[in-house]
Length: 257
Image: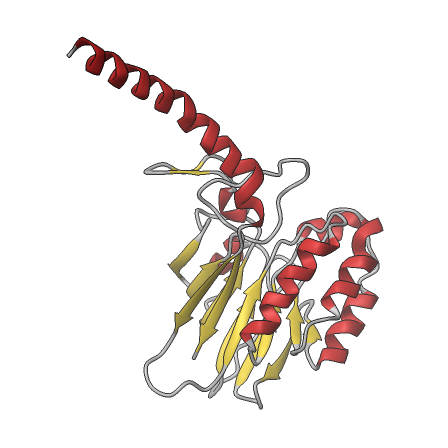
């Protein structure tokens, strides 16, 4: 009996020591590249189009990782893809990132993020790539996709100046989630944002430890906003040297409507 109690104590002691170590290993080794695919059906009835959102790549030169992300997007066979900002942090990585994105086999519609602007990179290659794919680089511009059934509105500046097209599925792309609160009373069928990274570290029952400014509390997942439904994607990459994710895997989000 004494030996049994002793063994239980040793087991509990080992588990108490192992749990933090496993969490750290998950956050540093496994989860930053444990890519998840989420799929949402927006409306009942027959599917008219299918698209993928990815965001916040923060590419720092790891072509193998970005190449795997692109391969997964291609394997999903969407009608088009949407990128909602922060491709890079430093301009020196911009051309390589664009070269990897050139492997996408569908139209790409994209908006810049704050780190893209802060890098002072020339966006012309990205704009040319989007056009070559049949998509568009949407710095406060709008266009159509999926055979004219979808109006895609790209928001960059703040406050936003944007439109909504009657009779079409209106999809708004922005980097900052908080922009959903500042769209001049207009409403959209769906808004997609990034920027928050979901906090990168999310504790059960608590949520994100830290989120950047301009999220307005919209840090991960679905929200009802003054401008309509908003989905905030946790992103692909990590910020700077903080290469950690916990309970917040990188994500490709598939939407069907």
